[in-house]
Length: 249
Image 1: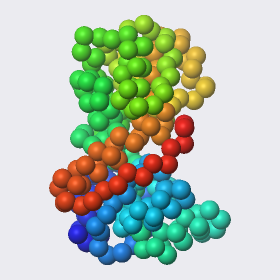
Image 2: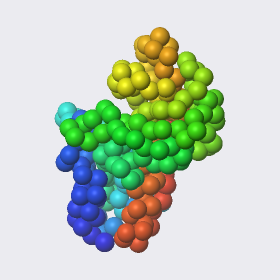
Image 3: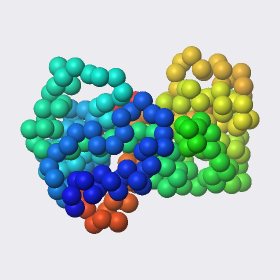
């Protein structure tokens, strides 16, 4: 499949033009004209790029790309990262908010399915696209049960701020969710399942009686890019490979 064809398909499927995003979503670095193998990763980083080259990847698809609106000087680590991609003819495609908010392969939609939650709506909108999701917990659950469910789903440790014992209606926001915590409180949610929170909002959640389940920024954002890889394999028959570069955060 040609790079141009694949990029056009991804741009349309992910609706990258529908989001007000600081990330420069879409093709960030152009490599070879044909794509046979795609690498899937969370972060555009030297470790990821080195592993992609070793795996013979033609295109690397990431959640956190190299370019975030402001111009960057091509010096230091940024120069080394670009040199690795360009010298090995590897393309880089980034999907940030479009991969958080997608209704099928989005991080939050996938997380809801993994936890057997029933999606009721969205919140934290970018233009008219919801980033976070509101979901029901069938039969309800304790916050500790939700923590255990998420830990099992991610195969990773999960923390919780147990400011409420049980939850029937929850919000999902993978990655950093600090900015959406006030909206979760305003919606009267019982718990917010997310990646990470800043220290400054701990007492805000506590005083509101909002439980918070923290799966880690990296781990909670592995699920969407993996789901997108499965979609690519099924639709185009291309080979995909997961490239892990965990941060522990």
